[in-house]
Length: 467
Ligand code: ADP
Image 1 (cartoon, protein in one colour):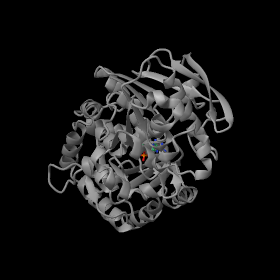
Image 2: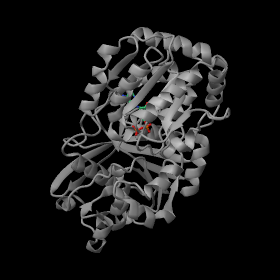
Image 3: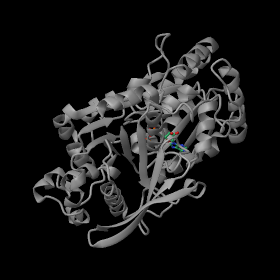
Image 4: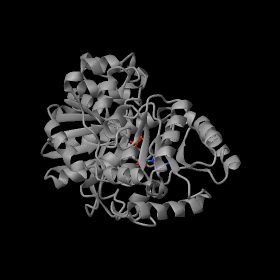
């Protein structure tokens, strides 16, 4: 099958979170399984763009409302990522360093989607599936069905994958003129609660909808930032498919970011060396269990309660563990987390920012990974952690339920708790510190986790069935 993924992110070209990881890996494994999977995304001005070679594939023009724009589609020359990668360049809109966060994001992503469909319409043949990811590509199924200029694509199958339903890309109806002319009777397919809602529109118009874990799929019918009734109504075409992880990128035995590579057999010694290095660098006590938090510092990740939780354990469990935070997001949370550092030298440190290399080093060095998330569609961090022999300490929600079991019995691998509260986090940290005291239990748990198969191979088949 020829499958075209349309996405705002794709690792290693541009990544802000799990969406990038998934779109950078799934197509590669689809190609390995014999499909022709391709990715098309905006041409941001990232390092990857400048460090690779490109050929121009298509030049075209289109309208964003009354604004006429020209666009260019370039293709990466060497198939470096294991699939064909296309970037869409629109001067004045997509030629920025960051992926999101600009005042004109609605116009940027609408223009991107119009350019992509204009390009598809110029093809002699039609792809088997157009697979759109999250709201940034969410208007594509509607436009394919209802915009007169894209009529040629009306019967091409579309699949939407929701990586996070919190973000829906709402725009006011005053911006409807940015879309190419469409059948007026179909305006309801764009609307949700008096706004144009790209995610809701994609749920209505895509042929199939998937999200990144079964538990999250179930949750969406009860808690999805206003879309509950829509998920209930459309449940017949919705399905949860757990994300995989790219075992080639995330392999402690070969990971080039690590100072010391290790395998299942040498996990204890390997992690110890990585931990020593990190502890030296960040002034932490290497003899204590090391807890890390890696992620966006936002409410969904319960980052707002982290400062309180760290203060609590640094006081009540003083000298029994050390902690390291890698993240960026809401400024007040960043500041609060940073401010704890000075009073807790030796036991607590932060790196406020985004650093891919440091994240790999921390998965390898840590004993425990903390994820108190309020919402976690799938969560990749816990899977990376497990692959690197790090025990996940997670709240029971979404994909965390599907991937982590509590070590209450000897078969388990992880610690789970129910509430995103300081008390539950502190109690779980206490449980983790107790487990850490038993070297045989830690060793057994590490080895068990590292051998769990979260590879993409098995998930590719699930997507093929959806197509
Ligand atoms: P989400 O997509 O909701 O942010 P996921 O768990 O699905 O959460 O994916 C998060 C990804 O982003 C992981 O690969 C994680 O390592 C990475 N990540 C998040 N924050 C940072 C950061 N500050 N520095 C480096 N990597 C980060």
